Amino acid sequence: MPAYRERVFICPMQDGQPCRIAEFPYWWRRREFFEAYGHRRVDVGNPLSEDYGLLLAGWEASAWDRKSRDAFAQEPRGSEPFAVEAMREWEMMLRTAGWVIVESYEWESGLE
Image (cartoon, rainbow, N blue to C red):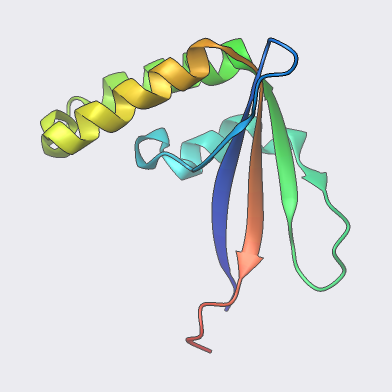
């Protein structure tokens, strides 16, 4: 059974600034995210695996992040120092985002 992972490319509004690449934030609630934005799926054309990307405007990603952080804050893990710091870091990265690309890719888990 294939396993999927997501990474996020945060592309700044200002030209010449570097993109940031990070793992999909655990507080974004993967299932809800793909229900909301899955219709934007763009296949990358790999015939051997199901890899695709989703494009969001920076303001959309920031709005999703705020909504997700608010929901996650209600959970016990939401107040842990590592979670608070990670969410703060994401908020800072998204503040300057022009575009956000979520790449979903199939990877070998080694369990088959």
